[in-house]
Length: 217
Image (cartoon, rainbow, N blue to C red; front, side, top):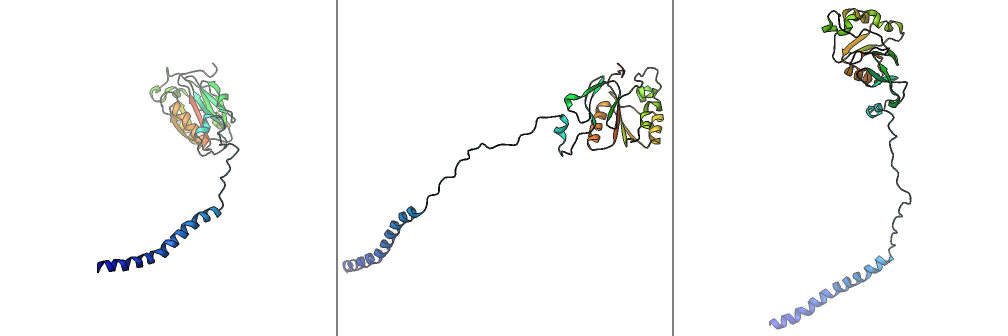
């Protein structure tokens, strides 16, 4: 009985799988023909010109390295650096390499750098511990502020190595002229002046060197 069933089922299974096998063979035969009929894409041509990259122009001044907002022209005057006896000042949009050394005290006002002849010694000055050499100053030392038409909104005093107080007569003069003031050591006063000038503020500075130095030397 078993022999009879196997001999009967085998031809049926063979007959069922034969159409499937034929279709598979036909499909396998058709695939290469289809691939051969498809166009072969040509490789993209390589560029014949080299790629160029934007390059930054050579540095003109240190000021540009910190002008992150690129607000435009630099201030008309600013302190590029200073030594113990003077200040390297840049005027009129010149490059840092064209900074001019001004020895002794200076006044930076309305885009100009002016030599400033004021007392710098503390010997014999009353209250020199509080006011330093400024204890010997009179309102005449700031007469230039009365002479200009465009007065600054704020004036910075750089008092040398240490910060000193501004004597009452000078405070009264600035109040009369409606000018605000701030007193700092010279290093900080230079930095503050540069920042405010870069912001477009109408700022002035009266700066003493770190070592007393006559402006006429």
